[in-house]
Length: 460
Image (cartoon, rainbow, N blue to C red):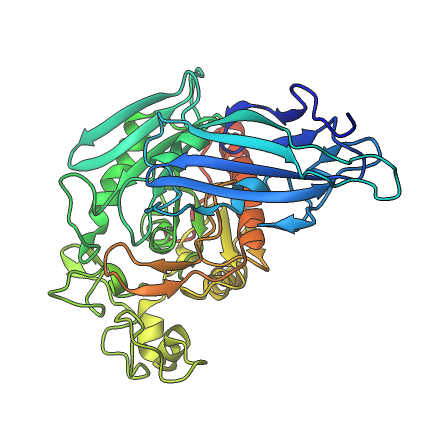
C-alpha cells in the first residue's frame, strides 16, 4: 500500500560519535507529499528532554532534515541538529541538560512516523498509513583513549583529560562560572580534539568553599605553574578559558600572571573585577569581594560605587525596565578605573566569545572594551572577537538544548535571564567550539614553531 515506511527507512549519521559532531537525519520510503514527524528523546540526568518536528516529504517520499525546514514542531529552520538543541524537559524532568558524568554517553532515541492519511490530495489513493522506525543515537563526551585523572595536588582540585597522543600537547585550563564546580564536559570534548584540558574547580568543588567570595588568585598561579612544570604543554604554558565569572577570571589571570599564560579565551566575560554578586557568601553579600591577591581583596566595581543605587541579585525588579547596573556602575569613574582588568599587561593571543543579546551582563561590551584596549596599547598577537547576534549569556557546548533561557541561579536561587534565542544560542555554541579549538591549536603551534614563548608585554 502507498505510504508504508520501509524497514530501516530512518537514517541518522553518525549514530555514534562525539557530542560536538553534527548529525544528518533523513527518512525515505514515505508517501510522496505526506507529512513525516521525527521525534528525538534524550535521557539526561534529571529525566527525558524531547523535541519533535514535522516535515513535508518530497515527490520521492524522502525527508532530509539537513536541507528541509520543518512545517511544524519545536523548531522551524533548516538544521538537523534542531531536534537536539530545541529539546525541552518532559513532564517530571528536573535539573539541567548539561551532562555531569563524562563517562555516561548521551543516548537519544530518534523516531520517525508517517502522519496517517497525508500525501498528495490530487492522487487517488489512501495516502500514508501509520508506521514508524527508530534509531538510537549515542553522543559521547570522553573519547576512546582519552585519560581522565583527578588532580588533588598542592590544594588544587580538578580533573585532567589527556588525549592518547605523544609529545607536548596544546593545553587549556577550563574554568566554570558563578555556578562553581568542575567543568569536565567541556574539558573532555576539548580532549577529543587533541587538546589536553585541565578542568579546574575553585569553589563548589570537593574541599573548596561553597561560595566565590574571597577566592585567592594565588590558587590559580599554582595551577598555572603546575601545568607548566608537570603537564608538558605545547608552547610551555597553558591557555586559560572560562565562561562568565570564569571569563572575567581568564582575563584577570592573563593580566596578573602574563608570564604564565599562553593565551586567554574568555566566554561571555566581564572587563572589570566585580563583587561576588549571586555566588556570594551570604555573610558578605553581593558587594563583597570576589578575588584576593596577597591576602588583600582586589578592588571591584560594587565596592561603595557612587553610581549604583540598586542591585539585581535579590530577585527584585530594576527601578525601570531600562536600568542596567553594569552601565550605572561606570558612572563612578574612579572606581571603574580602579576595578578595570589591565589586560594591556598581556601580550599573548586573546579570543573573546560574547552574545549581543546577553541579558545576564553585557559581555559584548566587555569584549569590545578588552580588545580595543589591547589594540590601543599596541598589542601585536592575534585578537579575535566572536560576537553572536542572537546569542545570550548561555553559550555552551554544541548541540545541547538551548531552550533553558530563563534560569534560577544555582547558588543564590535568584531568577534571571540569559537572553538570546534557542537557535541563536545553538549556532553560537557550535561555531564557537570549533573556532576555539582551532585557535588553541593555532596558538600552540605558533609558540612551538617560534621555539620561544609568546612575547611578553613591555615591562613584564
